[in-house]
Image (cartoon, rainbow, N blue to C red; front, side, top):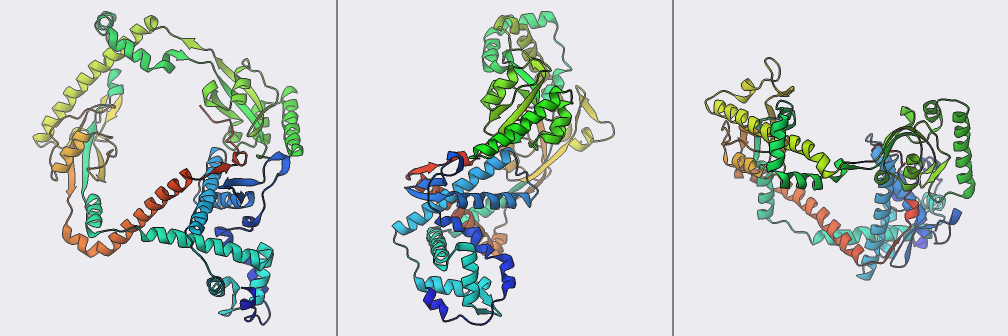
Length: 518
């Protein structure tokens, strides 16, 4: 193809174009696409993955991870700690899926010709000057970014294959008028509620069963108490935990031994400062590289065996209150840990827990009965014309139960077919009643929820108007098609991956800092 482009060569190159070296192509595919596999520094394989035996280079993966980080960062999202690990996982999935798509395109016999490559290159503004393709500009830019025009053209051919394969998949997606209308009706069918929830937890503070009542309840509900005990093992069989601070010096995945040694030396220097009497929190603020804990003086929170990196948890739980660990190595890097509080393991037998459980269940039962009575009274008043907002105002003469305010809230608009209603939760009977109701109608009963009974009035009921659909048919059909194309791509990629031989280099992912609050 180089020869076909050479005929367009001419004039002086406008070097100012070098300030944005074909960014659009680096976004789609980078020069790393042409790297070869092999061993990297520190023994880490120099590949991100092998897909059906084809190497996906580390450079492709790192470029994708950097692009994702920049994308999330520009919207103010955290891109450090656990978020960084998630970003790198997404990046690895993306480059693997890209390789699978290209391989499938090749298997199906899709071809991008030299003429198509030439036409694509000629229309790219990066290679034009005053609206005209300039071969010198093209040649110099791709040499700087890719090493040679041949490598760039090979990468471009892969990208066009990728785009062509996905376009062919998208063509299989069809949206009928009936499907578009059904989707529209689902979004045009809306309810806004005014509701009141009567708080169960707060009400339990208002009921105070006597010891005699608790004893009687325990005798009559032994099986229920046994089931509660078995369903809440963490409450009655508590593992040892420790509240700790940490200083972290990060070590990148696959780092060379010299980098690891430098990180250890830095943590040992921090250890020496603490041993000489400096405040651990002060040293953490100055030295630690964990953004989640650094500004809090390294404060992590409680650590237990099941919630943290194994090496970190083992070292933390071995400390007595006030002790500082020796340097600890995890996949995140080198840590120094200080114990601030130790909570020993605690196991409560069923017999010992029985009175506590009985009291809690009895209080919950009585609180539920009390709240249902209050809710029914409020519902009856609403049916007689007294608005919920008047019965349960947000400011003056506020109603309280167990010290918690009970106020009328608005929820919606939402589709009554939604699995969970905003502010209310998953209450199928309430949703069905709201769907059948009209604006201003009081819903017919008190509805039980885990957080307490709820009553509601339909503030606004909007039903689909088919004439409105006709005016939006084209736009709605296009939106539904894009949605279905996305779903089809996800399902197709999952199918491709399930049938492929994929070997991931998970050492490249790194791990989140062990120092996350429990």
